[in-house]
Length: 506
Image (cartoon, rainbow, N blue to C red; front, side, top):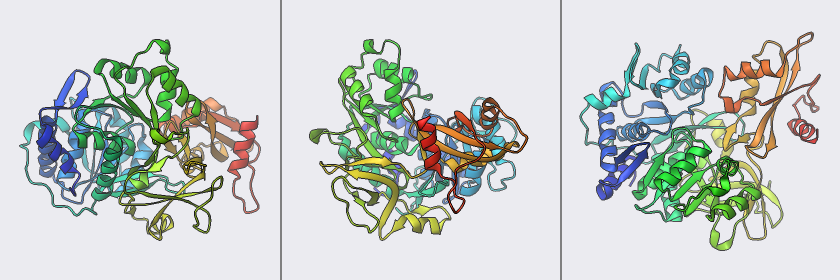
């Protein structure tokens, strides 16, 4: 298998009549998913898409995401998944940087999309999921209804780019990681071998499909196994629990925040999720308290994993047979080599801290149109993750710092420099710095330290409201600290660690 579309093709041959997608009151078989994907492949081709083109996808976890995903891959289109919470300016940057020829989006995101494509001559194909279309738009359902399924699959090279997923890399600036068919297939196979899932299993994926964890660990692995995916378009703790109970989900995959939020539900001690046999957590370090409380209450283990976009999702998992500790990256998946090294690239000893470096078939091709940045992280055949870990007595690594300055809130990476750019757009702000502060519920919360221009006055509410109009709500600082100056080093560099320490100590 060297083409991602073949996951659907092979599974449909084996388990065509079995349920692939369980969404609200709809149950869609693998045969129906393949038929819809093949129709959309024809529709995309008819409206002018050619192999090598790029298409952005901005959809919640609905069946049409899977239809479009496999339909685009079938005809050789590179997919650019975009977070559904993005606002116009963020979308504009991603669409411009990726040179996407079009975008598929739900009608609820229309206003942001229309603003985002303004001035982008290359991004003219607007495909909307909704009941009505406006001038310049094509309904996704129209392509489904009017296209006959095609049989031929674009004969791609395994090293052709399948996905461009935006990530901070090591520098803190959003960059498009180019992930090939071979990269993602390798990751999916490794996950399947580790999980040992089969066609009788079902999963509640409490993570968006636009997130790489949703791509590989949920949609990719469970489609590969012929299992049933229970879709939740809006991921909330109460909805997750209801779907597990009502639809008898056997696996739950999510970020640490969902487990914390479930424990915060009213009358949580009366909730019964007897169908669950395994839970998985990734995207951020899981707190020991959360791990112990959840496992004791529901009598189901949570296995924590470590991954990153540049390695196509998952890299390692804890193993229940040898025990686990919250915050541990566990042991690497089959086919993945993982080391923790010092500044001389020598393996660290027990108790020492070093950088995690990775080698294997799931490691990205590189950053889109950024050769220098690619060379910085791909050296001597190893991916430099920028994540620091301490080696414990069992040989496991314990994460101590995640990607230097990147804030990880509810499993989502927030890039301080991107947030600061918007803060500097506020007319009264002279200087600004953004840091992540430990938070029990979200892992980290976003705080901003702001220096106002001489003679200006502003309130926290005023600045937060300004930010929310321009970027995804989860990226916006929750707390604004007003100061006269920012602490800086001899070279003028803002001392973020000092800012963070001052906030946490107060």
